[in-house]
Length: 116
View 1 (cartoon, rainbow, N blue to C red):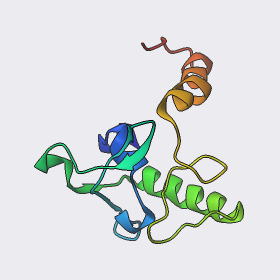
View 2 (spheres, rainbow, N blue to C red; view 1 turned 90 degrees about the horizontal axis):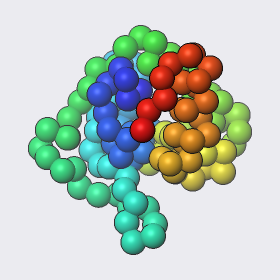
View 3 (cartoon, rainbow, N blue to C red; view 1 turned 135 degrees about the horizontal axis):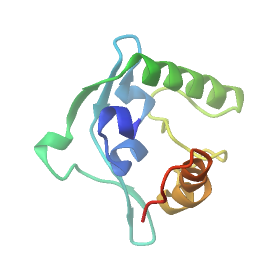
């Protein structure tokens, strides 16, 4: 999603299903989810440009539909103010763990250079 929309980690982390219009292929960025005081908190965007609508590619829309179906099959909420991107326990994904457990192994598998 970040590659096809230009959205930042916090914007994707704070994305609710109510922010998606998959029929029109639009994502509305409204609030980032940030680490604050040892926990997570929804915040106000840094700039006016951080709030808005972003068009979704067909592939991104199809991936989101499959993701929603998978979450629903696991018993996670997939409507309204449910977060789109969660771990298997339904909690927000921690950025550091995602990079270490998922992103870096994908880079290695694709024979792409490591990132810092």
